[in-house]
Amino acid sequence: MENQNKKTPVVLVLLAWLFVGLPWGWGVAQLWKNAQKLFQSPPAATKPVAPSSAPTPAAPSK
Amino acid sequence: MGALSFLDRSHSVAKPGFSRWIVPPAALSIHLAIGQVYAFSVFKKPLNYLVQVSTSGGGLKALPGVDSPNPMDWKFTGLGWVFSLAIVVLGLSAAIFGKWLERAGPRKAMFAAAVCFGSGFFVSALGVQLHQLWLIYLGYGVIGGIGLGLGYISPVSTLIKWFPDRPGMATGMAIMGFGGGALIGSPLATNLMAYFRTDHNLGVDKTFLVMGAIYLVAMMFGVFTVRVPEPGWKPEGWVAPAKPKALVTTHSLEVNAAFATPQFWLLWVVLCMNVTAGIAILEQASPMIQELFKGRITAAAAGGFVALLSLFNMGGRFVWSSISDYIGRKNTYYAFFVLGAILYYLAPRTGVSGLNSIPLFVSICAVILTMYGGGFATIPAYLRDLFGTLEVGAIHGRLLTAWSVAGVCGPVLTNYIREYEKNKGVPLADAYSTVLYVMVGLLIVGFIANAAVRPVDPRYWYKAEDTNRQTAAT
Image (tube, chains in turn green, blue):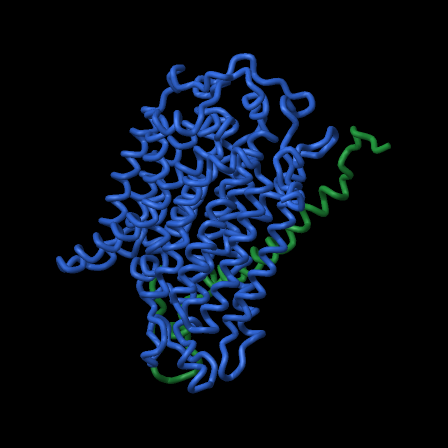
């Protein structure tokens, strides 16, 4: 006879959260990678790419 | 019919000892799936180049925003309607099927949502195979849109019943999933298309088929896991407050009665204003940051900014709705409208002609986006406070028409004001300021509507409150 008051095993609760948490975490990681582009350095054109005698354009003032 | 009897409400009642913490993942499996709709734009360029690539080969070498040179290909304008149609059908189906959902129970509604959303992809795959755009409208827009509407509202009232002590947090969790769905849907679609792509085929049809199958299975997890509490169930050790807060009712209303109250329409205005203002930022985020900080923000960095905003939009759903359990729903919306109005006013002043601070601009937009998401996530608990739990899912469904209206008004208003200012010769950076100042006005309207919310008049209360139906709702 099945016990009607049987508690849901904690492992089952964890598995349920993993089922949604894993793909979600993967999605957040992908997005975070993309979001980091905002924090990367200013446009490459403002950086000197090679030593040159010609004057390099000044970096925009902050 | 017998084979599907397990979907009946009576078969989904939880046995004693069932952990309520299983229900949020069940709800999330639905919301994370249907949230894919926000990532539909990843299909637009491949769908625009189907004929060009199949005839000329060479894979996808499209220029952003430029239509395929092949006249047989679908245009961007036509493809844009797929997403709009899906969102409009979401609002309509949530409003139409909400009452049925309350009767049928969450399991049956989630099952219908899963079948509709999955089938929407399958019909769309056929549309790609046969190159018939109307099949994409029918599949993703209409059939998938019905799945969106049913899926969006189906777990809400169940979560509210399982978490009477934290209704804001519980619904916030599910609705955060809707915000996070695009985070999975976008890279999933991109990777699948890359996997199926050949020289003469962009792999969109196969991607649709696989995604339809994946989402169908993922949503079925929710169908089989969700349970409704037994009538009269309460969390262990929890006692309902002896003196409930002023706006929290212990009574319930039927959806039609709630629809007739001024409170319903005040909340409709509250949601509509909050969403319209949020859309103004979302719509212009990328061009606005590039224009305000000309020469300092690249297109790639602007893309990163939009991605960052998505994270805050998602996080705000959980954070604000959880906070609302402590400070109350009305105060939460006051925060959205007061803080929002200040931030919308300040945002354009952070540009190069003002404070010249990128971190400040980004922070302001991030906070605004948390409030945009928070507005969606807090509204079900606000409805529960005012109208009780009896038909809160159906009431929520009808309120979502505010979202449909904001979804159309927000972009139209934003683009119209910007164009109007541009045509007057106003510099583009200043044109954005005008848009945001108009949004401040809308937020003030929302503030007034929120301030006008009072407890519901007892004449609207559900009369047969001693029936089983009422008991089941508590």
